[in-house]
Image: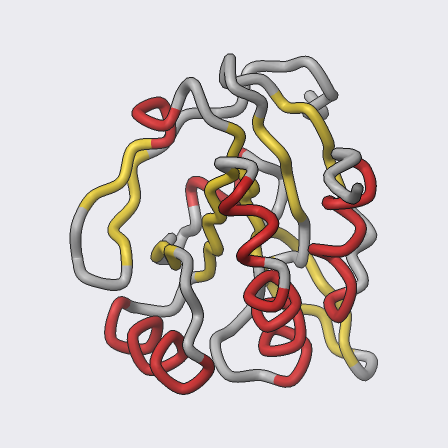
Length: 156
């Protein structure tokens, strides 16, 4: 069953970069951007994270929480955050990536003629009531935050 705009966002609890649990439903009342990405410190993932960082002030001013999710562990997330001064939370969804699977963001991928299971670069905006407001399945890493900001009409 495909996730659709208006559906309740699948709830989850994952560990953040400091090893602390974060439960999505505890963020009800504020808008949340959840972005799934393949791996810390890779070119596309770095571009995407830095695009969110570059738009951090505007998103924070509008009380929007950003959650990046990959299967990397907390130590990897801490290094990634430190290297690029990322001001938002990164969460660990270890194999078999149950949370990413519930968001249809983990599955069969193809690269250079080879097929493998992996994290897909998808982004979701969860509204204040905990429902999916936007779903992005064809993400341009370098401009994902710009796209979300435009769709949420945050620019003056």
